[in-house]
Image (cartoon, rainbow, N blue to C red; front, side, top):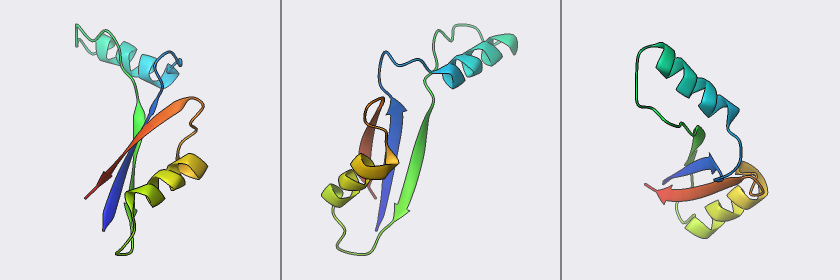
Length: 76
């Protein structure tokens, strides 16, 4: 079984990488991009029987900095 974890900075937390991407897109001629938030996707290959709660526990303990990041879990 696989789990996909999406981690993003929380609203209100500055995202310098996202701002750099927004600026670069403008420099390349892509108009109308008012904001970019950059995150990460972590794909886990899990043993059968693993649960969404276990993946959430992994996020809370290691995969996401829950002070400044939010996450969502998708089992695939």
